[in-house]
Length: 216
Image 1: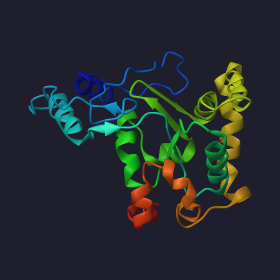
Image 2: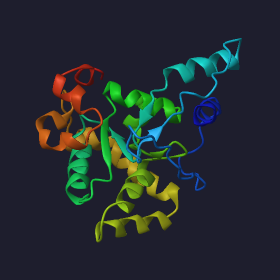
Image 3: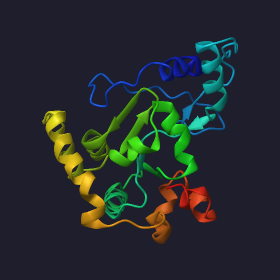
């Protein structure tokens, strides 16, 4: 069962994002849920809340939402450079394959739990969750997103052949200085470009002016 597998994976140490063996996934579909959603089987038996790992597993299983979406790019919503990148992907992604989420929003939390990360990790490196068994950070995340775009943009993914340490060294240098070079805002910038919100999984939260605008 997917829930049992997911709990087990969450309790293991997080693998390095550059591991090439990260796999795709086979989403479970139901009549009431789109076939592209990541569906967690709620009928799977929950671990008994005994002690130690058993109790932790039960707690995690109880807090994971029923449905998560695949191909979600989670990024720093107050960063001007990041926002420009999201706008570029939005326009290039003619088939709307990529979804977005500001890391400052509450909607990002279940995705972060899924891969065992926290907000500070994403503030250092953008996160792309391809599915329950595949997620990427930093330069690899950006290039994996490009691989889903139509030509000629998908050609950018060919830069994946460059060794990850070299790519991430350049990425980290820019990321470290992005606020000084490009600036930041006091709230998620997508609230000022609401035409983009149709592809944001935290759309309702943004429109409602909820926690996403204050969780910095």
